[in-house]
Image (cartoon, rainbow, N blue to C red; front, side):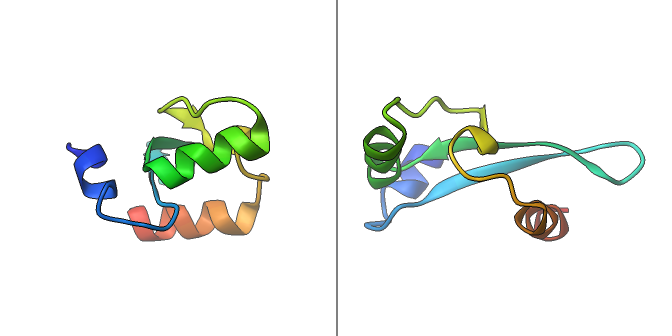
Length: 76
C-alpha cells in the first residue's frame, strides 16, 4: 500500500499501525508500519532515534493494554 502518500495529506502527526491476529483470535505484535514527516520528526526529537518502519509500537510509545485492545478490536 502507498502509506507514505496517504499520510502525506495529514499536517498533524499520523501513523499506520498493523496488528498480527493469531489463530486463536488474540493479537500478537503491534507495529508502526509508516509515519508521516511530523510523526518521524517527533520521534527523533523525543526518542533521540530515527523512526524505523515496522518497529514494535512500544519502542516509541508507552505500552498500554487498553490501546492494544483498541487497535485489535478496530483492526480485526
